[in-house]
Image (tube, rainbow, N blue to C red):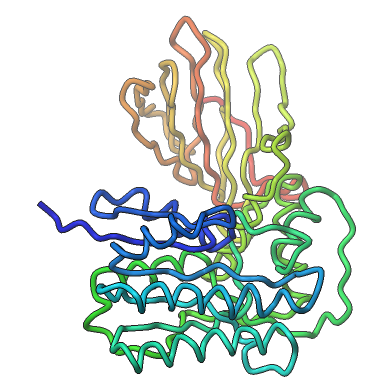
Length: 373
């Protein structure tokens, strides 16, 4: 049986805490205790007394009065340390600090004070501590219009609200929430073997405010023009996942233009800049579609529902080649250039075919020549 590990997270209602708790709740070997504002002193003592590792993520960053910075970021940290000092067991402590700890402002000074308390405790108790000065963190569940520009922009753009950019050339250093969670998870089992002190989250991404806005706007537009967003970088992938998490709950879906006639329908689904497009073709029973060939354009057909036949005849020859297709046995049929081809629905219900073409349809150069198979 896997050893059970007792984990305490402070600030579990916050952005990082909520994500970390959700991850630990999936692990059978983790006994998790959550600390929030309403947690009593008695419960806090009980949790810390049996903890193997404490993730101290609670803090204050938008108080009504500057004095609350020290109360939330220094004094609460000191309270945790004093409780641990009075008990026999000494858990490892992971402190979520900020790059602002080097700044001479009220928030930065309070974060620095919390760090110093943790460092002193480690020196006196020989308890492992890990301090992370986090830059801008982005990802799902971050509160918009609070202290994250990525969350604010994702929310406002997806909700058709105004955004303000004072300096498009200003660069941000970003870390993704899942990378933080991965790093924190690694500490749970190895914290006694890892060198204590200041630690870093990698990778750190750099992006200008202008480029950030452009990316998020392209994600929004992709639902209209059907273009798959450019996800060629890790940052783009993570920003896209983040953007989708801020969609309005009544706007997860979006319509596609269906080209409908008595034969069925043809609907463009996804388009790409350099990898063609995907469409959905629906054919009524007995209907034959196609009877054309291409010079350069090529396609892939995948029947996902119904049954039918795809016929080919090489241009200038008489021999007809047939492929029987059905949604009961998924198989992709390549449509080579130079072969006139058609697809017929042989069933009693609609036949649904997913079609990929290697290039976007260009009405000025369709590369499509009609000829019966």
